[in-house]
Image (cartoon, rainbow, N blue to C red; front, side, top):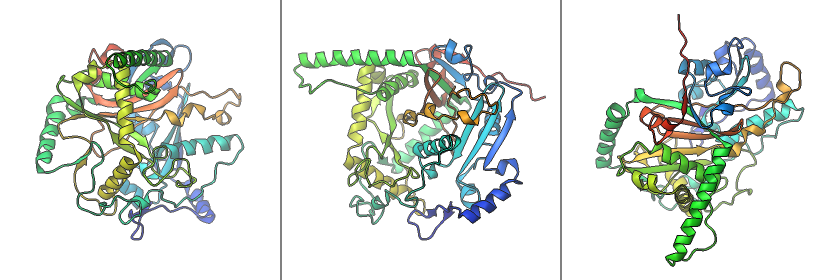
Length: 464
């Protein structure tokens, strides 16, 4: 990736020619480990469970014995060494170096192998990561990966400054606000500073914030879905008795139910009158802005672009959120997401974000999806990627041909600031759903929240 004076964004991708790639691969033979595009680490002297206590293999694995559990993540230094040792650590390093935007690390433990893709979000979203794994698995089975078609095509360029699909005021000083978003003025900035200082220094100090994994077995998820279905049936009956015109049955998806369950857990510690601003992630490939159609030629025939964005749900008090039946909270999430992702609202959101975030000339203004003193919580749902479907069996070193299974999904982020209040539903593996979250001990330990479950602690080892 390089800076560019011609590209509207100010950034361009550079791709190797066959000759250039041959030279690069030759240099890779003598490159130090931290600069290798593909790096292998041998940790076969220890178990994967020693690395992360929630991950295990066989009948005694936590996924087979614990029900819902919360697990410590790996120690930060260990995580960096075993996953992203050869990864780019910052945007500036990516732009100034000759390194690729994506690297791979394979770490072999005594009972499992950890495969890590390190990538900047500038490459694309999870569909880009999916394409990498699909191409890799396909190649292992002797089939070529899908070709890179229309690699330089930007599907959202038309929504930027001067684009024919942009909102009329995209070049103005104050473009239209998407639902739930606001640009901070002087008073908002002062409140934001005060609230941040209180949050980070007194209420939930950064030293108490930590990443952990939550495992939710399929049986529990199915029970939650059944509860939500019953809640909505009761709501329908109540609405009919009150004379409300109900058009069809009320239905919610698994993602809505899961997020409702998560919100009840990570808001349990808050005062009842605390205003909250939950957000989720919408896929613009499925919910495109006005002027585009999903699954059509409006999008390039490749996944190498970012097609996801933050969607703000309606504000809600913590007490109201906690009191709502699970099904009704899931319906609140579904309805809020649908309202915010109408084609016109998505176009407004896309133009708004391009206006403020264009890398070459950002607006410099502070904007957010809520007032500065509201508590926010964001979820990204990766289940559509279906990591468990990738068959890496031909890569086995022992030659047995025994099918390779997925035991867990691991992730971590590199951000300039705090990672607090971010949640990722990473996908399904070993009989349940894996969730990654970063938040304070007040949330992890609250008895009405995650404190009610078994916590698997990382065994600290001596550095002597």
